[in-house]
Amino acid sequence: MILNVSGISKAFDGTEVLNDISFHIEEHEKAALVGINGAGKSTLLKAIINPSFADEGQVVCAKNTEIGYLAQHQELSHKCSIYEELLSVRSDLLELDEALRASEKRMAELSGPQLEEEMRSYASMSERFERSGGYSLVSEVKGVLKGLGFSEEDFGKETGTLSGGQKTRVALGRLLLTSPDLILLDEPTNHLDMPAIEWLENYLLNYKGAVLIVSHDRYFLNRIVTKIIEIENGRSRVYSGNYDAYSEKKEQIRKAEYAAYVKALDERKHQEAVIAKLKSFNREKSIRRAESREKMLSRMETPEKPVEISSEMHLRFVPSVTSGKIVLTAEHLSAGYDGLTLFSDQDLLITRGEHVLLIGANGTGKSTLLKILNGQVEPLDGSFDYGTNVFSAYYDQEIQLLHDDKTIFEELSDAYPSMNNTEIRSALAAFLFTGDEVFKQIAALSGGERARVSLCLLMLSNANFIMLDEPTNHLDIRSREVLESAIRAYEGTVLIVSHDRYFVNKTASRILDLTNGKLISYIGNYDYYLEKKADAERAAGIEESVETDTSLPTQSKLDWQKQKEEEARIRKLKNDLTRTEKRIEELESENAAIDARFEDPAIASDPEELTKMSCRKDEILGQLEELYEKWELLQTEE
Image (cartoon, rainbow, N blue to C red; front, side, top):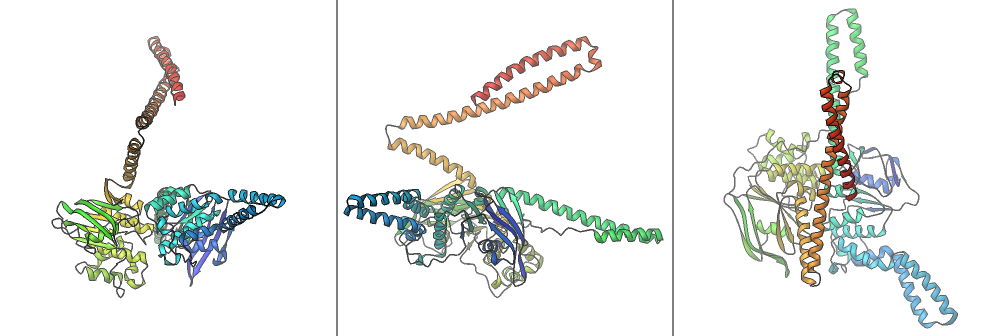
């Protein structure tokens, strides 16, 4: 065990955030902290880094454990380049490299015993340098920077000029290069595009140390973690497995707890009814029995009502007008800025009812395309047209036109005066605003709450074609699930830019991949896109080897064909094995049944039936002998 957290509690201004939080992390384990925004996940990470930050509890690490921590916001004060910032992580190796260079100069000037002494010192330093990874440091730094989405042109940028997201990526790179025994990551994927997230996934999967991650990226968690620590209502609960396993188990527990709560309430009502009935008899004996039951009832503990979380949409968002079959047509679209072309000569067709998810690396022009389609940016070339009866609406994460002086309820009622109070509350409840929460001031809302209000307003609009730019940013997992349900239930057409692969997988009927200035369409969700993209890349790799090396074209094809033939052979072998095992099981069962019938006295007195059964048993044993041999042979071939 590398980390043990026991009884951690923390309150702010009298409000309890964490209450008796306990869990442990094993060496090499990958775990996640999950919970709604404000649950206390970042607070818990701070308590692990600085145990005195907590009001109560204890944090114990294994001896000599080095912990690395990535907070959500970073300040880099060093006046150096991105490349130098990461190199500085291994200042010991840089100093050793300088010492080696200085030694080389001295050796050029020395002779005799002094040279021999210098050579011994140089050999010792060189061995230390190699053992510590000095010769691979430069390539490792460049690999990490490129993996996190920095191009070689970015390496020279001064850290002071970077955006908040870029600084976080640099800080993440520094942390990974230090290779601590335990890494604490607070929302590491927030400022990463899909390629960078996939790179980080592979890096962490192969990381030798332990990792504790706070993240709302469910696809990321599914791939990385084997333990989920949930923080809910200030308390913790630990689940084994990835995010999907946690989600399934949590739902089972929630249903069981709710059933226990309902059963306890029913039992209490039953006892109260019995007590009332006994008292109504108005006899001394009955009254004593009623009093006895009352004492028992007073000692009966009623379970606390479980938190009811429903991610299912009970409110369907239906456009008031149905659009024509063709929703959007774009021809020969080109976009760019400052002499840089993002994409050129691209055509696009979107039809009614499609849920199109636009994906791609940062800087490829996804948001620009949405802004072109909404008239905010002029294309360099090309044109687009909306179809018949198409009414569009646009959600830009950076432009949320809400009124700070209004409450959430007023924001909706003023925007849609025809809706009554019940309809407004139902719409807000679908986006997790219930009870008195609907009267919160817009000015007091968090980024995630503002996003939910904006999305609710958008879904209620008369639009039958909605375009969303990174709608899951600032949303916790619970809010993302609600949005997914809303999108799936939406009967209009959607075009969404997103890097949330879980969200894309749940909502897409078609994927548009904007890569290398081209739009490539895949009918299906994200998993289907990955499968088809991998197939295309494999096929492209084979074609490329054919074109670039004339000495190997036939061999490449033969190798590929051989691989496919081998896969087909293994599939056939497994099918044969399954059928053989099934037949053996059937015959063994029939043989056992015959043996049981032999013991039946009625059968024992029937010579004809005994003969028939004996013949059948001989047939079965003969067939089984052949099947056993076949099974053994198949096992050998496998």
